[in-house]
Image 1 (tube, rainbow, N blue to C red):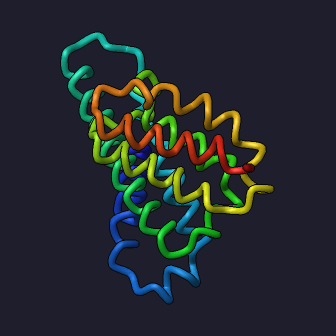
Image 2 (cartoon, rainbow, N blue to C red):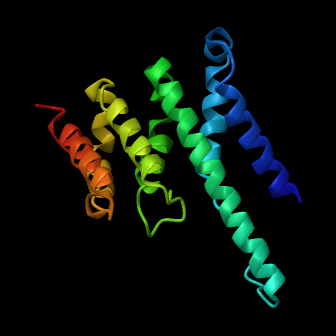
Length: 173
């Protein structure tokens, strides 16, 4: 029951952030960012003992709950980035890989809704506005990570992936 409680608490915090006043969000930006990144990185952790059909139903429910948490955390991150882009700077090594993993179908972090994949890619586009010196170590990784969204089945996702990849490839020119 412990992982369920943790996921529920993360979901509650990510949901509440949207209704908090900006002054409170700015004062507690660091812990909020940590919670949001933890929510984005959640995956279902069902055990491999699938001896009965009830266990498979539980695994499916855990997978669905983890997807809801990742989706809500991604939406919260987008809102935080719009208000304070610099808040993500200490967490670039975690946030950048998570954002393109959310758009990679073979990854356990994958977001099944195209709208959310576009939001994740939009966050990468926002992050590209940070100073080049901070982003340079991640440039090649983002370029490789965006290969999967370039082949997404949804056109809107492919278009956003092209835009993001172009921005990341051309940022030093």
